[in-house]
Image (cartoon, rainbow, N blue to C red; front, side, top):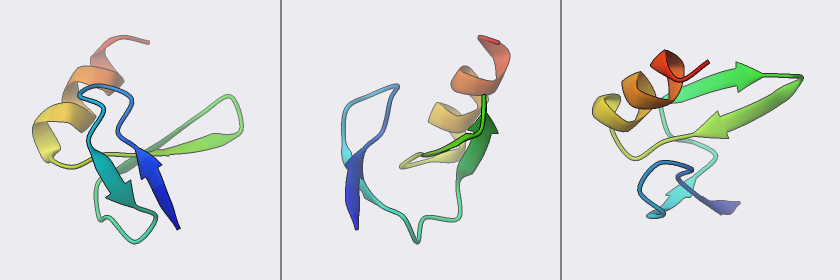
Length: 42
């Protein structure tokens, strides 16, 4: 399944190794950098 990285808007797969959970939803990222930015914005 394809979705958008919430930080940069790039299309990413739900198989991405970069992911975080927030409020019961899983978010997927194109890179560790985008994941780190998302995690620090809690």
